[in-house]
Each structure stands twice: as structure tokens, then as C-alpha cells.
Length: 114
Image 1 (cartoon, helix red, strand yellow):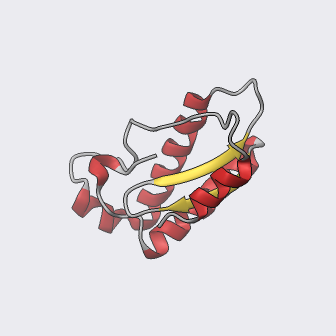
Image 2 (tube, rainbow, N blue to C red; image 1 turned 90 degrees about the vertical axis):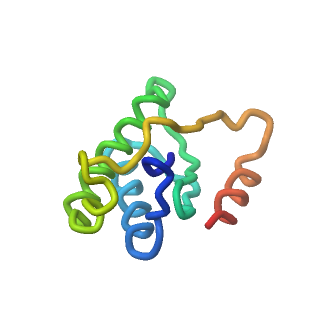
Image 3 (cartoon, one colour; image 1 turned 45 degrees about the vertical axis):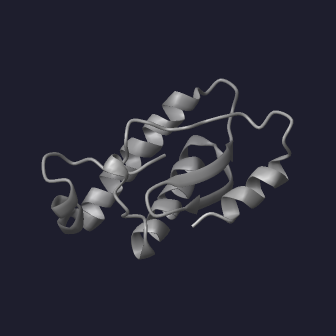
């Protein structure tokens, strides 16, 4: 997931809060976060989820709930960056299944980000 307009906002307490919020969302919906890390303008996470769930729905939930949470907590900061409407995450994302790559390899890559 990327911040809207790739603004470099995922630093310090905002990055920590985003990661914690994603863990909270995962617990609520029954997903398992295997690895998560932020860079300045995007988030990498590896998760396990039920095969009945769709990736696009998971991303939508994470994006919506994270945006709402961050605007509630950091509204004054975000309003200086996004003055037209209350957005945070972009509509775009990249998702893939692990396939033949081990989850340990993906986890190592994610943990090396940021």
C-alpha cells in the first residue's frame, strides 16, 4: 500500500501507529500478520488469510480503517498535506501470492525495508 501521492508521511509515531492499526485490523478480521514494515511512503506486509477472503477487500478494509484512524489522531498534520479531502492511502497497491518463494524469504525482505 502507498500513501496518496507518495507523500513521505510514514515516519516516527505515524509509522508505528499504522503498523499497530494493521495488527488490530488483522485481529478483528481473523488475518495473521507474518511480517510488516513501513518505508517513508509505503507499507509492506505479509499476511495469512482465509481463502474465502479477497485481496482487494482486505486492502480496502485496511486502507479505510487506517485512514479513519490516522485522521482522527493526526488530523491537523494530515490536513496540511491533503487539504481537499480526508485521504491517506492511494487506490493502488501491489499484491502477490508467495508461490514457490518461501515465506521466510519474503519475511526477511519485508523486515529489511524502511
